[in-house]
Image (cartoon, rainbow, N blue to C red; front, side, top):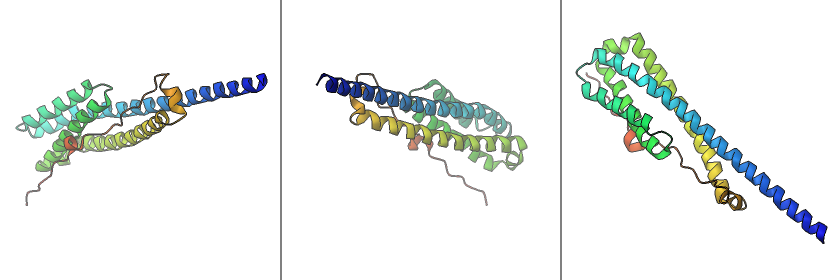
Length: 184
């Protein structure tokens, strides 16, 4: 009887250790995903001033748009690791950067500028990387949140401080892309 109880106890401890290790792995995966998003968002934030300066040379009278872009970038950088606030702020950056690109349609010389085309291509590639990183992060968060909320993982998660994490979602109201009108 003693040996049977000892075996059951050892199995429970081993199971707890395995669950704990799995939760640690899931949390690390989510943290890694967030780090990837952060890198790409910073890359985009670094591209924005270069894009603004390039467009500004052609469209100096669009001062309000330039100020909006710079303000949105600053807000996004100051949001830090608060996933919800960062999503809203990055939505504004995405919207204003799209407005900046759309503005270029009114300036044929700008559209033909090699520097502008290169920056536009880099920004587009960065947006794709942000989307891939966001999908990875949200998948990792989904796995972590599922584990934290299901038995037997939740028996270990609660006492050891594993918590649900927020998905990274760009606020669609902030990120809406403006329409572009072409002069006939």
